[in-house]
Figure 1 (cartoon, helix red, strand yellow):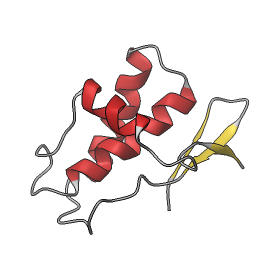
Figure 2 (tube, helix red, strand yellow; figure 1 turned 90 degrees about the vertical axis):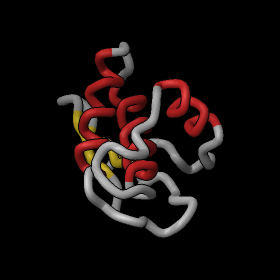
Figure 3 (tube, rainbow, N blue to C red; figure 1 turned 180 degrees about the vertical axis):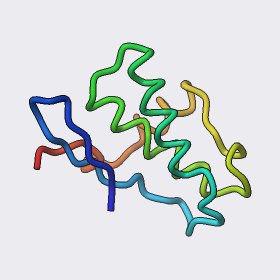
Figure 4 (cartoon, rainbow, N blue to C red; figure 1 turned 120 degrees about the vertical axis):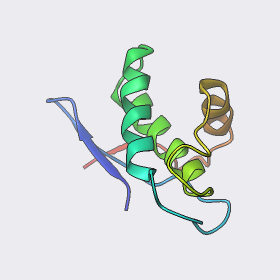
Length: 93
């Protein structure tokens, strides 16, 4: 259904990133999201940017077996973000 986050002032909902094919295995999807969300902040992102990065890495991980296969680099994340549909943006709720 997506991800929800708040910075104490705003509450945002982020849709899932569209899977190129049905998920192969879901192991590690939440870990991939959370670690990528935190990494975005470490790299200076705001909450909107972090919410956009997380689902992309989750989408990639569920296309592979295991929790680490499919993890993306920052360059790969940014490439997929640039290719994302126009609706792939966090929205207030």
